[in-house]
View 1: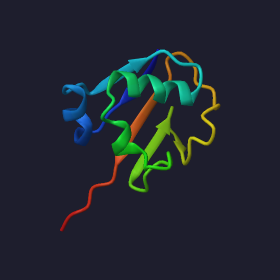
View 2: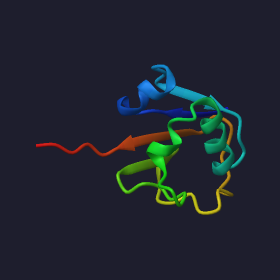
View 3: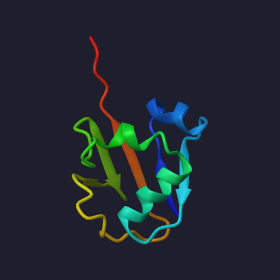
Length: 90
């Protein structure tokens, strides 16, 4: 299982769950699993062209992921994907 740790800003889109677990062997599969579990989250993470939005930080097992590319990057059972959203204000 791959665990997505979600920021507070996304909790309302997934029934208040702080994490979602999916079965996957690649990063692309993991995000497809997240989309099935919580379909509203995808539009907050990716733009219309499928690119990661500028204000989103993704970390796969503490390594910064700048782009999903073709989604073929492998993930291991027990991997953790942390989603971090920039917060602006003043």
